[in-house]
Length: 360
Image (tube, rainbow, N blue to C red; front, top):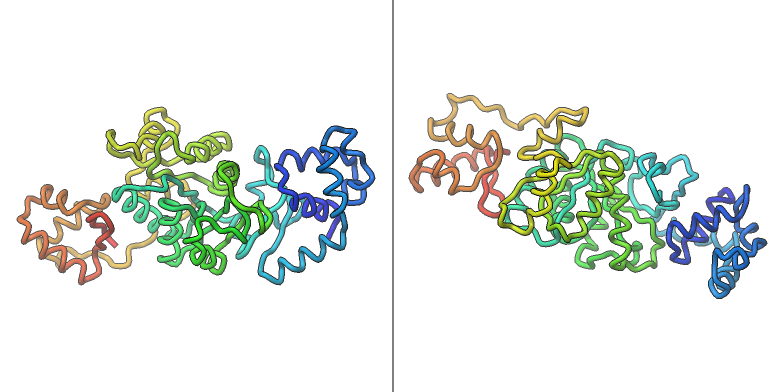
């Protein structure tokens, strides 16, 4: 372990802001280390208060850092710092780049083609369905899904990605010992096993209302694009959107009902030209060097009735509610019900939450 890495790990134990850690490192000269930290009067330099500096001096020990790293490794928690070769390139050059990452899982995923999916913690049935379908299609095409493990859009995107065998990254707002929300503990462990779980905070650090907006810069930076399916203009999602704009990322916004608060932010993004209007997965996948996942089953019109073909064609440009299909196809309730049952049995369609129907 080199001197700078040991110093960064040491500093991370004191819940300093990222900018304060950088200020300390910059104050230690050309060869920052724990030794130079102990020899430099950071109180005189007005970098730290007398109380804070003396508290940190008591724990400034290279051996203690090595023991801490070993203990975390025994728990399956790895550590990388900005000076390491495996530190994600996508994070190195952003403003206020994290100096340290604690992680469980495959860190290589942080360098893969990816899409960040964010939004409200309380989605409508429409928001749930749209998030499920877009995430399913994008993940099935081999794109890594990045989100924040929160209620609502975050957890929906993680779960749908895992469901189709995709890879997902969850960026935490606190340390590994304080997974938030606690109900997502098992989801977090599944992501650690099958994807990547990471945090810039030491394991014992609890999440706060301040750490969540800060971690959103990492979510925005790791995604090659950012998809917002539903969010109010006052939600934390706006921070992720602003970070994405600063980083020059593609922003994808799902349009919604103009009377729905949950569609305020996405409709505003589209109206202002800050992002692209998304109505199907190909609106996103066209910007990636991958092809849209091939359908599991090729449709031959001769294998279906005229009514079934009509339904399939209307679903080819996106999911529809049963009421929409009934109205568009001009079918009776009995006919639409019979056709949908047959198509579902044959594996052509999926019934999604909120009463929506989509092609598999």
